[in-house]
Length: 333
Image 1 (cartoon, rainbow, N blue to C red):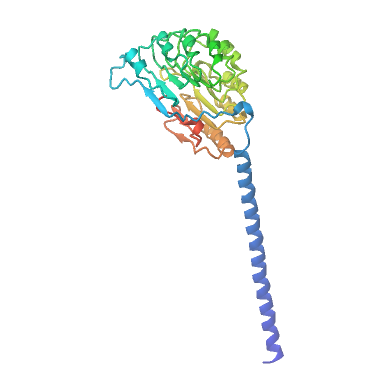
Image 2 (spheres, rainbow, N blue to C red):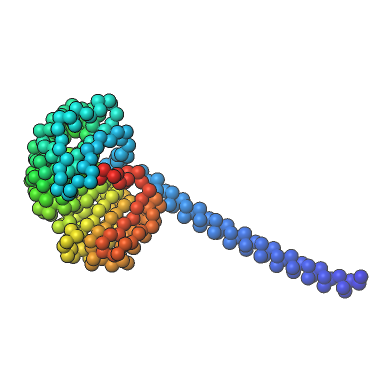
Protein backbone atom coordinates (compact mmCIF):
# COMPACT_ATOMS: atom_id res chain seq x y z
CA UNK A 1 0.00 0.00 0.00
CA UNK A 2 1.45 3.34 -0.95
CA UNK A 3 2.36 6.03 1.54
CA UNK A 4 -0.16 8.39 -0.05
CA UNK A 5 -2.98 5.88 0.74
CA UNK A 6 -1.94 5.14 4.37
CA UNK A 7 -1.68 8.76 5.56
CA UNK A 8 -5.32 9.70 4.85
CA UNK A 9 -6.51 6.54 6.67
CA UNK A 10 -4.38 7.35 9.71
CA UNK A 11 -5.64 10.91 9.69
CA UNK A 12 -9.25 9.72 9.47
CA UNK A 13 -8.69 7.21 12.29
CA UNK A 14 -7.11 9.90 14.47
CA UNK A 15 -10.00 12.27 13.86
CA UNK A 16 -12.53 9.53 14.64
CA UNK A 17 -10.71 8.72 17.88
CA UNK A 18 -10.67 12.38 18.89
CA UNK A 19 -14.40 12.69 18.23
CA UNK A 20 -15.16 9.54 20.24
CA UNK A 21 -12.91 10.73 23.08
CA UNK A 22 -14.57 14.15 23.22
CA UNK A 23 -18.03 12.57 23.28
CA UNK A 24 -16.95 10.26 26.11
CA UNK A 25 -15.23 13.07 28.02
CA UNK A 26 -18.15 15.47 27.86
CA UNK A 27 -20.63 12.68 28.62
CA UNK A 28 -18.68 11.76 31.75
CA UNK A 29 -18.47 15.40 32.76
CA UNK A 30 -22.24 15.81 32.34
CA UNK A 31 -22.91 12.63 34.33
CA UNK A 32 -20.57 13.89 37.06
CA UNK A 33 -22.40 17.21 37.27
CA UNK A 34 -25.80 15.47 37.46
CA UNK A 35 -24.58 13.08 40.18
CA UNK A 36 -23.10 15.98 42.14
CA UNK A 37 -26.35 17.97 41.94
CA UNK A 38 -28.41 14.95 43.02
CA UNK A 39 -26.06 14.32 45.93
CA UNK A 40 -26.37 17.95 47.04
CA UNK A 41 -30.17 17.77 46.82
CA UNK A 42 -30.35 14.52 48.81
CA UNK A 43 -27.95 15.92 51.43
CA UNK A 44 -30.02 19.11 51.70
CA UNK A 45 -33.25 17.16 52.29
CA UNK A 46 -31.55 14.83 54.75
CA UNK A 47 -30.05 17.69 56.71
CA UNK A 48 -33.42 19.41 57.01
CA UNK A 49 -35.31 16.24 57.90
CA UNK A 50 -32.96 15.25 60.72
CA UNK A 51 -32.49 18.74 62.13
CA UNK A 52 -32.84 18.37 65.90
CA UNK A 53 -35.78 20.12 67.49
CA UNK A 54 -35.24 22.40 70.46
CA UNK A 55 -36.15 20.91 73.81
CA UNK A 56 -39.42 22.86 73.89
CA UNK A 57 -40.62 21.17 70.70
CA UNK A 58 -39.86 17.57 71.65
CA UNK A 59 -43.10 15.62 71.97
CA UNK A 60 -42.94 11.85 72.26
CA UNK A 61 -46.58 11.01 72.99
CA UNK A 62 -46.89 8.08 70.57
CA UNK A 63 -50.24 6.79 71.79
CA UNK A 64 -49.01 3.28 72.59
CA UNK A 65 -51.47 2.37 75.33
CA UNK A 66 -51.72 -1.35 75.84
CA UNK A 67 -55.28 -1.31 77.14
CA UNK A 68 -58.52 0.48 76.26
CA UNK A 69 -61.34 0.55 78.77
CA UNK A 70 -64.28 1.58 76.64
CA UNK A 71 -67.80 2.41 77.67
CA UNK A 72 -69.66 2.01 74.36
CA UNK A 73 -73.05 3.48 73.61
CA UNK A 74 -73.69 1.28 70.58
CA UNK A 75 -76.53 2.08 68.20
CA UNK A 76 -78.44 4.24 70.66
CA UNK A 77 -80.38 7.46 69.95
CA UNK A 78 -78.25 10.59 69.72
CA UNK A 79 -79.67 11.95 72.98
CA UNK A 80 -79.06 8.70 74.86
CA UNK A 81 -76.56 8.78 77.72
CA UNK A 82 -74.87 5.54 78.74
CA UNK A 83 -75.38 5.07 82.50
CA UNK A 84 -72.24 4.73 84.59
CA UNK A 85 -72.69 2.97 87.92
CA UNK A 86 -70.60 1.22 90.57
CA UNK A 87 -70.48 -1.95 88.48
CA UNK A 88 -68.54 -0.10 85.80
CA UNK A 89 -65.95 1.26 88.21
CA UNK A 90 -65.59 -2.12 89.93
CA UNK A 91 -65.01 -3.79 86.57
CA UNK A 92 -61.95 -1.72 85.72
CA UNK A 93 -58.87 -3.98 85.48
CA UNK A 94 -56.45 -3.48 88.34
CA UNK A 95 -53.26 -4.52 86.53
CA UNK A 96 -50.43 -2.08 85.86
CA UNK A 97 -50.93 -1.87 82.07
CA UNK A 98 -51.41 1.72 80.83
CA UNK A 99 -55.10 2.40 80.29
CA UNK A 100 -57.26 4.75 78.29
CA UNK A 101 -60.75 5.22 79.71
CA UNK A 102 -63.33 6.41 77.20
CA UNK A 103 -66.57 7.79 78.63
CA UNK A 104 -68.25 9.43 75.65
CA UNK A 105 -71.89 10.45 75.96
CA UNK A 106 -72.34 9.00 79.42
CA UNK A 107 -74.06 10.29 82.55
CA UNK A 108 -70.80 10.27 84.51
CA UNK A 109 -70.50 13.20 86.91
CA UNK A 110 -67.61 14.88 88.68
CA UNK A 111 -67.82 12.92 91.91
CA UNK A 112 -67.69 9.57 90.14
CA UNK A 113 -64.19 10.45 88.94
CA UNK A 114 -63.08 9.94 92.54
CA UNK A 115 -63.06 6.23 91.66
CA UNK A 116 -59.84 6.89 89.73
CA UNK A 117 -58.01 8.55 92.62
CA UNK A 118 -54.39 7.42 92.95
CA UNK A 119 -54.69 4.93 90.07
CA UNK A 120 -51.27 5.04 88.42
CA UNK A 121 -52.33 2.89 85.44
CA UNK A 122 -54.80 5.40 83.97
CA UNK A 123 -53.00 7.68 81.49
CA UNK A 124 -55.71 8.97 79.15
CA UNK A 125 -59.32 9.82 79.85
CA UNK A 126 -62.03 10.86 77.39
CA UNK A 127 -65.05 12.66 78.87
CA UNK A 128 -66.48 13.94 75.60
CA UNK A 129 -70.09 15.17 75.48
CA UNK A 130 -70.79 14.32 79.11
CA UNK A 131 -73.43 16.86 80.21
CA UNK A 132 -72.93 16.25 83.94
CA UNK A 133 -69.24 17.19 83.92
CA UNK A 134 -68.71 20.65 85.47
CA UNK A 135 -65.82 22.87 86.55
CA UNK A 136 -65.34 20.67 89.60
CA UNK A 137 -64.04 17.80 87.47
CA UNK A 138 -60.48 19.13 87.71
CA UNK A 139 -60.52 18.55 91.48
CA UNK A 140 -60.82 14.83 90.83
CA UNK A 141 -58.72 14.59 87.67
CA UNK A 142 -55.82 16.16 89.55
CA UNK A 143 -55.77 13.06 91.79
CA UNK A 144 -55.02 10.66 88.89
CA UNK A 145 -51.23 11.02 89.03
CA UNK A 146 -50.11 9.71 85.63
CA UNK A 147 -52.67 11.34 83.36
CA UNK A 148 -51.00 12.60 80.21
CA UNK A 149 -54.07 13.35 78.13
CA UNK A 150 -57.47 14.75 79.09
CA UNK A 151 -60.35 15.18 76.63
CA UNK A 152 -63.33 17.27 77.76
CA UNK A 153 -64.80 17.98 74.32
CA UNK A 154 -68.39 19.14 74.26
CA UNK A 155 -68.79 19.43 78.04
CA UNK A 156 -71.05 22.46 77.96
CA UNK A 157 -71.11 23.07 81.72
CA UNK A 158 -67.43 23.96 81.73
CA UNK A 159 -67.06 27.72 82.21
CA UNK A 160 -63.89 28.59 84.10
CA UNK A 161 -62.38 25.45 85.66
CA UNK A 162 -59.37 25.93 87.89
CA UNK A 163 -57.01 24.14 85.52
CA UNK A 164 -54.08 25.28 87.64
CA UNK A 165 -54.86 22.34 89.93
CA UNK A 166 -53.72 20.04 87.12
CA UNK A 167 -50.15 21.30 87.60
CA UNK A 168 -49.76 18.31 89.92
CA UNK A 169 -49.94 16.09 86.80
CA UNK A 170 -46.32 16.23 85.64
CA UNK A 171 -46.97 13.97 82.61
CA UNK A 172 -49.95 15.96 81.29
CA UNK A 173 -49.12 17.13 77.77
CA UNK A 174 -52.48 17.13 75.94
CA UNK A 175 -55.69 18.92 76.80
CA UNK A 176 -58.68 18.99 74.47
CA UNK A 177 -61.59 21.37 75.12
CA UNK A 178 -63.21 21.41 71.71
CA UNK A 179 -66.80 22.68 71.55
CA UNK A 180 -66.89 23.73 75.19
CA UNK A 181 -69.15 26.59 74.15
CA UNK A 182 -69.38 28.20 77.60
CA UNK A 183 -65.66 28.21 78.36
CA UNK A 184 -64.55 31.75 79.24
CA UNK A 185 -61.31 33.72 79.19
CA UNK A 186 -61.06 33.29 82.96
CA UNK A 187 -59.89 29.71 82.41
CA UNK A 188 -57.01 30.62 80.07
CA UNK A 189 -54.47 32.04 82.57
CA UNK A 190 -54.93 28.83 84.56
CA UNK A 191 -54.25 26.70 81.48
CA UNK A 192 -51.12 28.80 80.94
CA UNK A 193 -49.78 27.47 84.24
CA UNK A 194 -49.58 23.94 82.77
CA UNK A 195 -45.95 24.23 81.68
CA UNK A 196 -45.78 20.60 80.47
CA UNK A 197 -48.66 21.12 78.01
CA UNK A 198 -47.67 20.57 74.36
CA UNK A 199 -51.04 20.08 72.66
CA UNK A 200 -54.14 22.23 73.18
CA UNK A 201 -57.42 22.13 71.26
CA UNK A 202 -59.87 25.00 71.62
CA UNK A 203 -61.84 24.88 68.37
CA UNK A 204 -65.51 25.53 68.93
CA UNK A 205 -64.95 27.56 72.14
CA UNK A 206 -66.90 30.55 70.88
CA UNK A 207 -66.70 32.71 74.03
CA UNK A 208 -62.91 32.99 74.03
CA UNK A 209 -61.42 36.31 72.93
CA UNK A 210 -58.13 37.39 71.38
CA UNK A 211 -57.22 39.27 74.55
CA UNK A 212 -57.73 36.18 76.65
CA UNK A 213 -55.66 34.02 74.29
CA UNK A 214 -52.62 36.22 74.91
CA UNK A 215 -52.13 34.53 78.27
CA UNK A 216 -51.33 31.26 76.46
CA UNK A 217 -48.35 32.60 74.50
CA UNK A 218 -45.90 31.33 77.13
CA UNK A 219 -46.90 27.70 76.50
CA UNK A 220 -44.46 25.69 74.32
CA UNK A 221 -47.30 24.33 72.18
CA UNK A 222 -46.49 21.84 69.44
CA UNK A 223 -50.10 21.05 68.44
CA UNK A 224 -52.79 23.73 68.46
CA UNK A 225 -56.36 24.15 67.29
CA UNK A 226 -57.48 27.75 67.98
CA UNK A 227 -61.10 28.93 68.27
CA UNK A 228 -62.77 29.57 64.90
CA UNK A 229 -63.91 33.02 65.98
CA UNK A 230 -60.27 34.15 66.10
CA UNK A 231 -59.19 33.06 62.64
CA UNK A 232 -59.03 36.20 60.55
CA UNK A 233 -55.80 37.66 59.12
CA UNK A 234 -54.82 39.51 62.29
CA UNK A 235 -55.31 36.57 64.61
CA UNK A 236 -53.64 34.02 62.35
CA UNK A 237 -50.58 36.28 62.52
CA UNK A 238 -50.76 36.06 66.32
CA UNK A 239 -50.21 32.30 66.04
CA UNK A 240 -46.55 33.09 65.43
CA UNK A 241 -46.34 33.49 69.20
CA UNK A 242 -46.20 29.67 69.23
CA UNK A 243 -42.89 29.24 67.32
CA UNK A 244 -42.55 25.49 67.91
CA UNK A 245 -45.83 24.42 66.31
CA UNK A 246 -45.62 21.18 64.36
CA UNK A 247 -49.37 20.61 63.96
CA UNK A 248 -51.84 23.40 63.23
CA UNK A 249 -55.59 23.12 62.58
CA UNK A 250 -57.35 26.09 60.99
CA UNK A 251 -61.15 25.87 60.93
CA UNK A 252 -62.39 29.29 59.87
CA UNK A 253 -66.00 28.79 60.93
CA UNK A 254 -68.56 26.23 62.02
CA UNK A 255 -70.27 24.42 59.18
CA UNK A 256 -73.40 26.52 59.56
CA UNK A 257 -71.66 29.91 59.38
CA UNK A 258 -70.39 32.00 56.52
CA UNK A 259 -66.84 32.18 57.81
CA UNK A 260 -64.53 35.00 58.86
CA UNK A 261 -62.42 36.77 56.24
CA UNK A 262 -59.20 34.79 56.40
CA UNK A 263 -57.47 35.84 53.18
CA UNK A 264 -54.50 34.47 51.25
CA UNK A 265 -52.24 37.10 52.83
CA UNK A 266 -53.26 35.98 56.30
CA UNK A 267 -52.81 32.30 55.52
CA UNK A 268 -49.33 32.83 54.12
CA UNK A 269 -48.19 34.12 57.52
CA UNK A 270 -48.00 30.42 58.34
CA UNK A 271 -44.93 30.20 56.07
CA UNK A 272 -42.91 31.74 58.89
CA UNK A 273 -43.23 28.65 61.10
CA UNK A 274 -39.92 26.85 61.29
CA UNK A 275 -41.00 23.42 62.51
CA UNK A 276 -44.48 22.98 61.04
CA UNK A 277 -45.10 19.51 59.59
CA UNK A 278 -48.88 19.24 59.44
CA UNK A 279 -51.58 21.72 58.64
CA UNK A 280 -55.30 21.19 58.27
CA UNK A 281 -57.57 23.81 56.74
CA UNK A 282 -61.38 23.66 56.89
CA UNK A 283 -64.27 25.94 55.95
CA UNK A 284 -62.19 28.81 54.54
CA UNK A 285 -64.00 29.65 51.28
CA UNK A 286 -62.11 32.89 50.66
CA UNK A 287 -58.73 31.15 50.28
CA UNK A 288 -57.45 30.49 46.79
CA UNK A 289 -56.18 27.07 45.83
CA UNK A 290 -52.91 28.70 44.74
CA UNK A 291 -52.08 30.02 48.22
CA UNK A 292 -52.83 26.66 49.82
CA UNK A 293 -50.66 24.83 47.29
CA UNK A 294 -47.86 27.31 47.88
CA UNK A 295 -48.04 26.58 51.59
CA UNK A 296 -47.95 22.82 51.11
CA UNK A 297 -45.11 23.06 48.60
CA UNK A 298 -43.00 25.00 51.06
CA UNK A 299 -43.45 22.51 53.87
CA UNK A 300 -43.20 19.47 51.62
CA UNK A 301 -39.73 20.70 50.65
CA UNK A 302 -38.77 21.21 54.27
CA UNK A 303 -40.26 17.98 55.61
CA UNK A 304 -40.03 15.13 53.07
CA UNK A 305 -42.23 12.91 55.25
CA UNK A 306 -45.31 14.93 54.27
CA UNK A 307 -47.42 13.42 51.52
CA UNK A 308 -48.82 15.43 48.64
CA UNK A 309 -51.83 17.59 49.56
CA UNK A 310 -55.26 16.16 48.96
CA UNK A 311 -58.30 18.23 48.02
CA UNK A 312 -61.97 17.55 48.41
CA UNK A 313 -64.32 20.37 47.32
CA UNK A 314 -62.22 23.44 48.04
CA UNK A 315 -63.19 25.49 51.07
CA UNK A 316 -64.50 22.51 53.04
CA UNK A 317 -61.40 20.46 53.74
CA UNK A 318 -57.83 20.71 52.58
CA UNK A 319 -55.25 18.54 54.30
CA UNK A 320 -51.75 17.16 54.07
CA UNK A 321 -51.03 13.97 55.95
CA UNK A 322 -47.56 13.25 57.35
CA UNK A 323 -45.91 9.94 58.09
CA UNK A 324 -45.37 10.78 61.72
CA UNK A 325 -46.62 8.61 64.62
CA UNK A 326 -46.97 11.70 66.81
CA UNK A 327 -49.88 12.78 64.68
CA UNK A 328 -51.76 9.50 64.43
CA UNK A 329 -55.50 9.96 64.83
CA UNK A 330 -57.02 7.41 67.16
CA UNK A 331 -60.54 6.14 66.78
CA UNK A 332 -61.17 7.23 70.35
CA UNK A 333 -60.95 10.84 69.28
